[in-house]
Amino acid sequence: MSPALRVLAPGLLTTVQDLGRSGYQHLGIAVSGALDPVSLQAANALAGNPPGTGALEVAYLGPTLAIDADDVRLAFAGAHAAIEVLAGENVATGTRIEGMRSIRLQRGEVVRIGSLSGANVLYVAVEGGFDIRPVLGSVSTYIRGGFGGWQGRALAADDRLPLLRDRATERDEWRLDGLDLRPSARFRVIPGPQTDYFSERGAATFFGGEYVVSAGSDRMGMRLAGPAIAHARGFNITSDGIAPGSIQVAGNGQPIVLLADRQTTGGYPKIATVISADLPALSRLPIGAKIAFEAVTLEAAAAARRTLLAEIAGLPGRIVPLGRSRAFVEPRLMDRNLISGVVDAHA
Image (cartoon, rainbow, N blue to C red; front, top):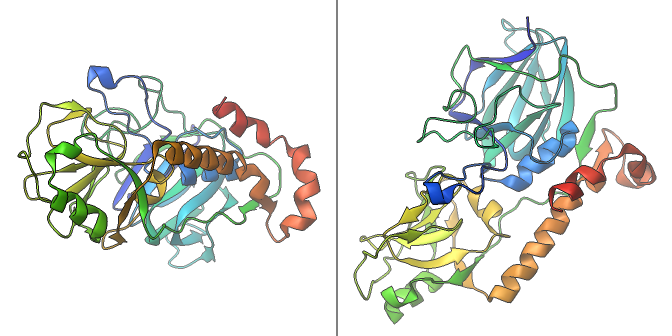
């Protein structure tokens, strides 16, 4: 039988995601991809994969997965979670492990991921990746379109996710030190492009107010609840292109931050756009989190983007064998050929 992860319980919303399918928005096809590409790439670094390898994106409540392979290496990065390894499907309790690490599991073992905390998504990477055919160059799941990932949908009980490797490589297990996923107090935005559709009072409300992530949020958009933003010229415009992080304001005056599964065009005016460096942190905010915004210049946004890319490129330098300090192993990291994969991804 081919190697696979077998789904015993799917969790609340578990999908296969990579870095998305860019280049097709002019055809009306969403980019999709990981809500939090930083954590995705961290999980892949721990698994020993190239940064954009498809992994499981777990939202709010995790799945239970049985190992149908001789052995397999999994890696976890993102939200805090109760991750438990069980000796078999009929075992009630097992060994609790922390996140931000890799682990090698044997055939018949089970990994159970409970409720997430501190963020709304966790990524589970498997060494070698999944044996899933890409759609338009990506294995990301686009649920609304019904394509990509595993059969175009979230995981369901009894799914078997095929793996590209039947055995894990022989190496130490790794953990990731010092990756700070805490959100900022305020998220940086570029005003516009439809600032003229809002009154001065409306703009002041947006930049001076505090909003809460509402339960209506999903991978398409984060709905915020808070002080209503006053329009000056109505709330309908000729539909135009939607950038990642665009903040639309509908007729009720409540902002919506458009995320990975966003539509390609939209007809509500956009008061601002979250800068790309802040969008991964914003996207991982759970329901009930408080959020505020501040305007920055395009030059500041570009500098922040360069800083984020440098941090992502430096992820392999934060990896250490389990149980050892970074100071002890840093001289050995260059011998592990970890850096080139991340650098090549941004070349």
